[in-house]
Image (cartoon, rainbow, N blue to C red; front, side):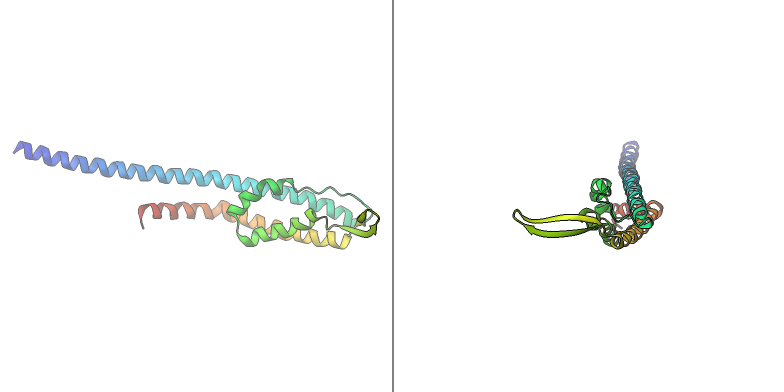
Length: 178
């Protein structure tokens, strides 16, 4: 009788060990997913914060020009470097509507649409010269920056408060086959 009891105990012990190993692996995977989500959340939140700071600086420069009617400025330095550095991160983690608003705010800055230009044809071809700032267009861009900033702030708050926790639970459920 003793060998059968030992065999049964060994089988039960083996099953419990296997179940414990599987459960431990699932818990470790779940913890890895949570850690990765926290890392992504910090990266995306940091990218949004950096972009919001750049947008605020650009907005302040444009507001100064519009408020003081300084249309004769031939060169206003507006930054797009942060936008380019975080563009891929934001493209992966933000909705299309938020990305579209950010693009709408940056497109005229990158395209030089803040200036009144004059084009004329000369012996060397077509030449353009800046006449000064287009203050009306600058005011429109300020509004676009405000809209994009509000959308980014809302996306950041949603991301940090809810979205990644929900995704972690969703991934765990898929991993468990539910």
